[in-house]
Length: 88
Image (tube, rainbow, N blue to C red):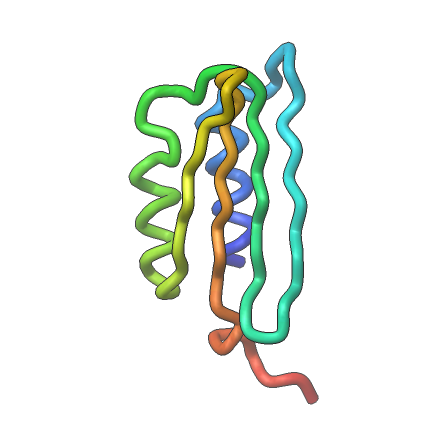
């Protein structure tokens, strides 16, 4: 549920729908789930928002935010999988 809420908040924060599409890639690692979010153009002020930062911190995750030479934004959010319910 945390991952869904983070993606939902990111879409809201970037003003989606926008003229430039946002790309979100989800990777499932052995120990973590990684959201790789690419937003073309300047990132809105305060992105990632406090709500996103709080949700990531709540599950002891990490956020890395970078900007390339074209001004495109990239967020990499790592969320630990040890909080998932055990599989049956």
